[in-house]
Length: 439
Ligand code: SAH
Ligand code: SF4
Ligand code: F3S
Image (tube, protein in one colour):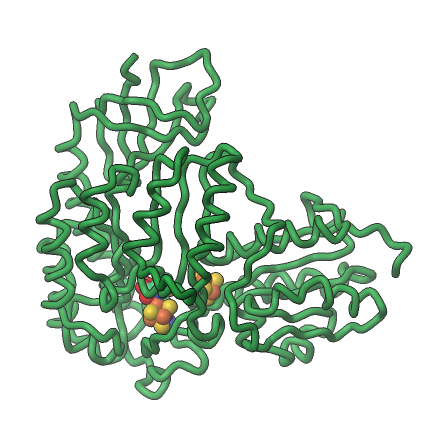
C-alpha cells in the first residue's frame, strides 16, 4: 500500500457545516501528504462527506457507492459525515467495498485512521462522540480567498422530533473564544474580509473559557477585527435568539443585516409536536425585535410541510405567517421520516401529493412576496461583495449585506473578485437583483 500514490477525491453533500468540514478534511489530508484530484477515477482514495437530513439526501450516497461496486477495485472508499455517523458499521454490510466510516466528531483522528487503512485494515470506524472539543485544525484548506466559514460551535442539544442532527453530530461543543478570535484574526491577515460564524445552533454558543462570552459578544468582537468587513452567522434557533443579538447588529455596521431564523411551522400546535420549544407568538416576538431595529434586517427561514398531524388549518397558519413576517427568502421541505427520531412514532400519514400541493402553494405565495419586496429596492444603492463573473452575460455577481444576489454591469476591465462595489439597483426578479456599478 505504501508504494501506491496517495491521491484522493472528495465530494460533499449537505449543509455549510459539511462543506466546511470537508475543507478541514482536505487540509488535514494534504498535510498528511495526499494530493487532491478532480475525479474519482484519478483517485486511490474516494471520500463522500454525506448528509442524512432527508431520505433523498441519504439515498444520493448509496447511488454513488453502487457505481463503485465493481469499478472501485483497488481504491479505498471512505464515508464521512452524517450518514456515516447514523449507519455506522452497518455500512460495511450494505457496501463491503467501503473501508472507512467516520462521523464529524472523529475527524481529528483522521490521520490515525488512515494509517490503519494503509497498514491493511479494511474496516476502520470513527464513530465516538468522546472528543469534548469542537474539531479545530490549523490545516483547513479554504476554497475562497475573500470569504469563509468559521465554526464556533458543533453539535446540537435540542431534540426536534423530526431531526437526525443530534444523532449525527452529537452534543453541543463550543470552541473557546480565544481560539475563535485567533483564527478570525489569522483569516483577516490572510485577506479574508467576510466571515460566516457556523454552528447547528450558532446562537447557543457559550464560551467554555473563564471569560464566558455569549453569542452576541463573540459576534460583536469578530466584527471588530481589523480587516473584517462583513460577519454573518448561521443557523440560529428561535428559542436561544435573544435581543442583544439584534442590538449588536444595530450597533456594529460590520455585522450583516440578515438573520436566518428557521420557524418550521406557523402553527403552535405543530411546533409543539415538533418539539421546537417556542410558540408562534414567541417566534413573532423575535421578528418584532428585527422589524424594530434601526437597520433593515433581511429575514429568511426554513419550513417543513406535511409534518405528522399538520391539518389544513395548521398549514394555513404557515401561509399566514409568510404574510405576517414578509420573509426575504424561505427554504421549504416536505417532511421526511428519519431513523432514530421521535416523530417516527407518529407515522407519516400525509400523502406525498398533499405535501407537494402544500409546498407548491407555499413557494408560490413566497415568490409573490419576494417580487414585491425586491421591486421596492429598484433605485436603491447597495454595497456588493463581488464573488465572480458571468462571462456570457458580461455581468459581475455578488451579494449584498442582506445576502441578496445582485448582478451588475458597468465595471468591465478590472479584476473585481473580492472587492466591495457600490451598485444602483435597476431591475428586480423574485430571486435576484440587477444593477449598474456606481463609479
Ligand atoms: N439547526 C437548524 C436546522 C438544520 S437542518 C435549525 O434548528 O433550524 C436544516 C433544515 O432541514 C431544518 O431547518 C428543517 O427545515 C429541515 N429538516 C430537518 N429535518 C427534516 C426532515 N426530517 N424532513 C424535512 N425537512 C427537515
Ligand atoms: Fe435539528 Fe432541531 Fe437541532 Fe436544528 S435544533 S439541528 S432542527 S434538532
Ligand atoms: Fe445534512 Fe448533517 Fe448538515 S444531516 S444538513 S450534513 S448536519
